[in-house]
Image 1 (cartoon, rainbow, N blue to C red):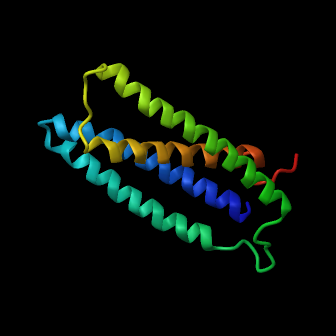
Image 2: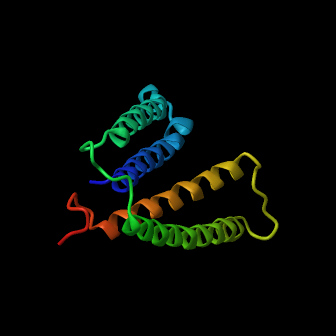
Amino acid sequence: MNKTQKGALAVLVITAVFLIFSATIPFAWFSDVPVLRILPLAFLALACVVMGLSIIFFIKKQSCCEVGFDERDITIKRKAIFASYIALWVLICIACIVPSAILGEEGSIKVVFLPIIIFGVFLFSMLVYSIAILIQYGWGGKDGQG
């Protein structure tokens, strides 16, 4: 597994943990059960641990003569950036259309939700980037052979 694959896998895991973390926040807001109120903090701690471990995993080389990247890696990253760019614009359009469809023409969005929407679009865009890289490499540790 080369450095690009390691980075994509780390971003995929971190994004998945943050999406699970953000899905638990409504349970903490609307729940009277103390265990459910602690759930987002537990996922936040898990996210910090996963980020720390992924940084260690990302920095560690398999061998001393491992190459950082080559032309194929550059091509794969360009294709993944293109897929992420398209997904970004689709998600921005969705983020504009969905609130107006739900709230109607006269509705309004609280300002506190705008950074959450932008962060969600960013997370999904990074998720598309990571998945595009891993799909192009073949999801395995065989570096695209086979």
